[in-house]
Length: 623
Image (cartoon, rainbow, N blue to C red; front, side, top):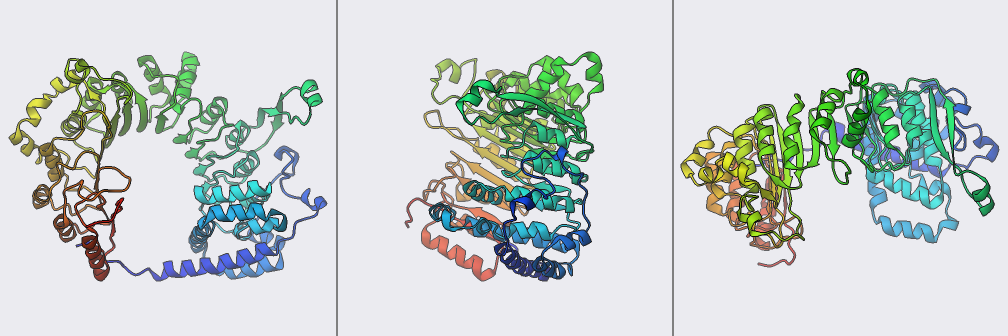
């Protein structure tokens, strides 16, 4: 039976209570905020209109210095907060930010509309929400993590856009110098070059940084790399036609700096940072050798940028330039498909690659075997699943732990009989071929994800003797004792409208589920309804009780369900509840379970105090 809900620990309950009190205090202090006079604004550590290079050298203040700079009200709250150890304060901040997010998201659209209507009657500090005072108070504490969620930061950014206020940026630039112990910082949407300069100057231990969806430019990226001088193109603001005619639109500017940057940075998220160019990214990669993961895709993917870079290097430069990147991604849209010579150069540039996401053709997939440390692959095939995929598994299958493969055909394209039946490709065998290939050639795989409705090559089908194997029930049963022993996550999703139905051989899937004793997540979405009946699932559980299963989701699609599309009934629900001790989520939207039966299940969960979420979303409730 599922594990019973445990009461919240005293520590967790206390942390949430302290967070509530601190939030009330911060919001009260924010309400008392008085906008500084214009002459006082020039005394800020970093003026919004000035470059960092033209300001006094910054240093990280200690807690006593912070205390002296605070107002009497802030000092009172800080005296109270200082009774807690720094590690506890970090947890309190996490709980507080979660509460602020809930407050801002509640009826957000209505609040934003009312703000626009009443904007003339509102003050800037009406949009602080306690965050500004919080950032002032936590200076000097040795916090390691400060994570603003994307949703919270987007809300704060929206209010900032309405008021045309830069005060959030000002507060970050003033507060971050007092948080020099941070190793993780998430400031999406709201980051600017000025904020990034402050980060590069005062957070030397930073390991992970999220700047996604922000206005950071190449200038900010170079700050992170610790550039002694930054040359960038400055846009000239045009206010009238005379300026447009008489003044050049762009000019190169060079600024001098003296700091090391974030030399321990391993992960940076630059997704949707439109002003970070390939030039800036290459500078970052070349100078921050600790980087292992960079999330970036604008006009070109990270892989494309490195291919272009490696192609321009001399032989001496190739030998000298070695990056520590362990993850790269090459998705849509892209302008360059990697070739053999590209991969050869990349193996010298990123020899430590362990994880890759690649949109390509089957013939290119086999080239991934050039990366000797690869353990996780995600490939989206534009043509078919074929011999290239098999060759990769033959060479690296013994070390691969995560395999995700997707193959789709253009729904607008008409498939000829030769494409469906003939030598070129076969339809309807994607899940069968992928499962047999991985099961036989990648015995250590922990995650297998197969999705799409694409073709498989006839050559690959023949090479794996697929038809003979799935037609031999005794062979399939024997495999349950030797494959997928390490499998923890199985995800299969098929999508098709006009194409032939895409599914998996029922005996093949049964063999996989019987073998996967460590399975924790099972997600099957698509045309699997004809396979799953109560007796089928009962046979699986009699052989493999799925004692580690945490999430089970078998449905037609992730939209609203329709009762009966999956023939599993209340009997299977009861079987799972009696056998699967680790079950945390059970999604039964398309199952043959009526409203009354679902209510009975929910009552059972409540009465037994199980730590279990059962969901059933149907288009029309019925019996």
